[in-house]
Length: 277
Image (spheres, rainbow, N blue to C red):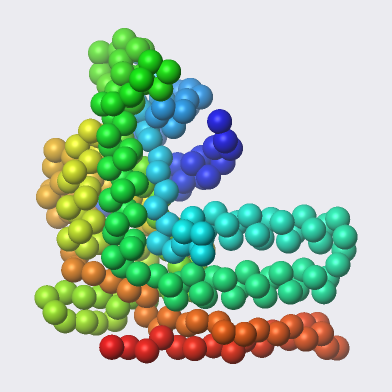
């Protein structure tokens, strides 16, 4: 079992969210809040909360909006790179090397945003979410389905939810929105919801509810979907549905240099702005 720190951090964002809108969303958040002190260690699903008559299971999955060259999660790789830079400086006290590493991290961040492709994102979103949905009812003796795992506790009320963690670009939260063959810029502290995303969420019918946790360094946005009342969930939270989206003003870093001077370090980047069609 790997470290649960990312999953716990994501759950913590949900518990601390104070901008929940609508009765459905507030009801789901209240249910989790009421059982947060009764969490048991689990892997299938990731979190299990047990009370006298109720068991609540929460599965977590990660769908990064940006990917590194290996098509893995860029946000996780960025966290690793930052921690390694901090650890290396603490060990070697090599400020020059650390400055170059920081420059590379910034460069990678811009380029990960530059590579964003809506169709690739939606494909990954569907693959990951539906893979987890399949595990609600399918499993083995060694790795039971999520629902069979909850049934083993023999509680009269069993609830199963899914948290979909979506890190978005730290560099941009202005989007190019496509709707009805129109394109416009919109600055929002959330991830845009598209028809494709809602369609995929509707397919996650093995769960009782789905929570989308989108965030960057600048914001966190929590959106709740009751699987029996998806349309009401959308209406109550005033979710605007578009056809597709992209990051606005994407920049590709082609070259970079770090120069030490009397004031510290000077970073210079040679960039290419994405051409708009």
